[in-house]
Length: 187
Length: 172
Image 1 (cartoon, chains in turn brown, green):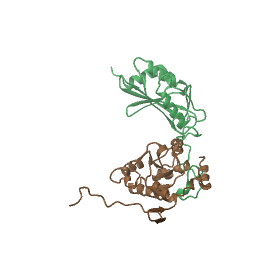
Image 2 (image 1 turned 120 degrees about the vertical axis):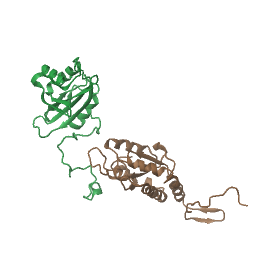
Image 3 (image 1 turned 180 degrees about the horizontal axis):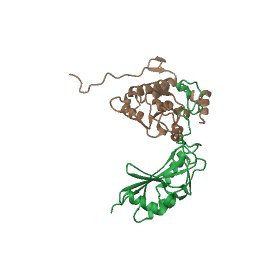
């Protein structure tokens, strides 16, 4: 007789990092473990201003289900979040606010620019619209589309997961990274 | 007797005579032009007059007519008589070199933000406005974006990241 509770055997497990293992122990480098844990538990912060935000809502919803990738916990405060998702047109007047949200996030932090407007200003080649959020904050992944389909946003998240997974623990202290922030006037 | 465009026009002509010009009635909306120096007198008369009673400001906007030399900038007032359900449109023209118009904020509180917006986009200087600052655009902006004096695409713009459009990069 089968057991009353059927366990789901179709669970995809994360790959074990390279390391040295023996009887009852396994030794690997710390940043591999940290990268594994971080990349599968990203807390996104949605910063949605227009139609890309609607697509992002679909991505979060049950049909596309961002939760499958360990990123279902939206935090609506920058202080708790790891990845900032900027979806939609950012007017120049909103630039300083976006920048402040970015500054309030704790390191390590990542940014995805979702859609043409956030990436480049899109069709709004005009006096009032910021021509890409990378003019005020550094961006890790750009998602193309106007607006992008949820699949594209999911791929953007997977790219960020890949970055998080492979990031060296010392990257945020490197001169290169400091120079990058310096170029944006961020200490 | 219901208030008609005819009556309004006669009342205004009695009071101001030759000062009001360019009368027209587009789609039934009575329109005329008043001199910038007399704009408050006309608005005040329309407000106070027991028969006219235009006591609600629906809209205040700017227009730029680059071809009207010496009076390039226009301020348009839309007033509404709530009691009789009738509207009137008043225009006043000022030169772009010295765009001074008296503020209507003492008469209509609604004019405050609308005049700020008109200043923001056209640079019209509302004399006597309590707080004439930009309202919609960034404070650092040093031009008036809705004036018809800009080329459709300005190749010297530096805020455009050309790299994304295959025109050669400007941002290192």
